[in-house]
Amino acid sequence: MRTLLDSVMKEMKRSEHMETLLLKHHIQLCITSGSESWYIVFDGQVPHFISANEEACDVVIEGDDEALTQLLRGEDFLLAMKRRGDLNVTGSLKYLLWIESLFYLSNSNRR
Image (cartoon, rainbow, N blue to C red; front, top):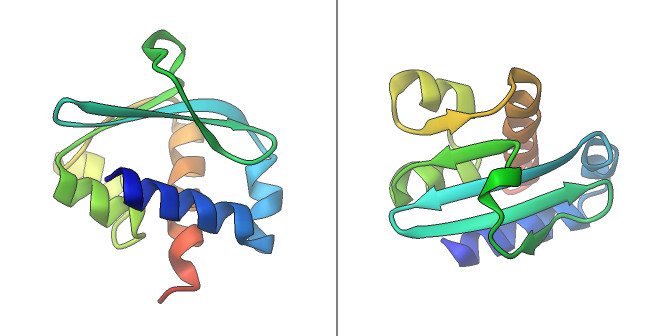
């Protein structure tokens, strides 16, 4: 999962059309699969991993490896997966839509 997250973040950093979107919000994202968690900060620059700080997470996404892989590869949408129960998600709708857009667009040029 970490390898896939690294790949997605690398694509976000490299993509010109993502630059404006990445500057839009300053949030902390927590992604959890089983006993592993990853914390990613979007701070108006390039997204990067940080040490655990669960209390400060603006968005939390929890699911199994298969569901998270579909999300990170842009194969499915965050809110649809939440609605079906494939993922447990918390955060404001504004941030959830923004995260959904980031994952989808970061993979759009690989389709």
